[in-house]
Image (cartoon, rainbow, N blue to C red):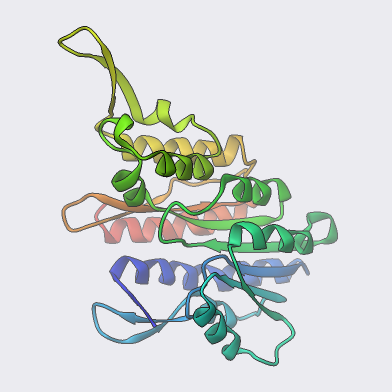
Length: 272
């Protein structure tokens, strides 16, 4: 089992809150709907806070009522894949894929075309900035998919968004470019300053976390084409620094309203 902290438990609680509402909504319209989990893990977790065994997103999805028509669980790790397959070995509606979700999910998306009266909910919860923008844009262009996306700003701050950008490794900058889709993130994060010697240098803005989160929200709407993207839910550590943001993006106004209310509940729990 993967050990998880408090905020991971909150993420799972949000998924547990939303999946039944989503499934009931689309079932009511007689849509065929898929659940896609891009970083599925083992399916079970150990709470660092209590030591209890808790369900991960795959088992939460499998126990959702009314059920989804199809489930797609994706992970790179063979041991995790084997465990995921053990949960529903004889079910034809459950598909477990070994591989990178950036390559696997595009092959699934034709099964959720809007014109075929199909819908999809995709949960993307990586440990770092490992989601490619091309995948996110494909989901937005589908016009039938809703996504939860974990925006790991801590990974960015540790490896890419350094105070002076020239200190970042080229490989880390390339990771950021794949995540963002281009290099426009630089203009969001950095400003030019003139040194005592009269030369210009780029330095990181003090409120860069909030700025980059809002810029990514704007990209989800204006570039990827999701009509509804509420402000993301920030998750903070003990000293008040943002670890990550949980985004939701949807073509559906009702889903937007439901998730907005769920996010607001957890904002209040953090005193935000």
